[in-house]
Length: 132
Image (tube, rainbow, N blue to C red; front, top):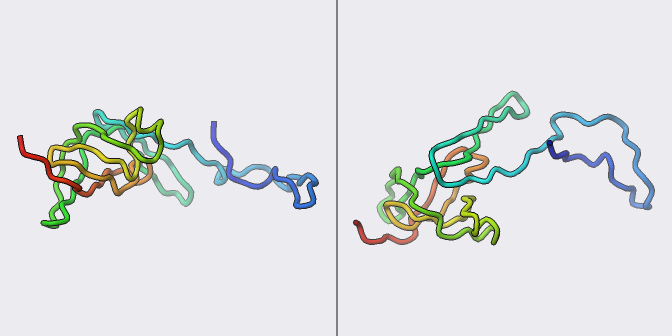
């Protein structure tokens, strides 16, 4: 069931009721947030306004990790989600959003992209751990 982002049903400043002057339009419909989890790669393609496509990640196990000291970017495997400061519920359920801290094969990294919106997981290395 889609979410509607329009102000057709709001009240007037005087407290009176606002009447709909037209029907709902498909471009006003929104969608529920995509909650990216750790696992085998599963992506979803959505058609958006202007005949464009939006790629959303449902599950992913690799990320593009940038090391700021060497300015190199590598693809690394995500081992686990350490913390998600966005929500306590997301933290408990290990959901990846922008700002989440993940543990990778290169070390701890902070996600800088929006996996549910951009279709890619980019992260910046925060602390290097010992190599195994």
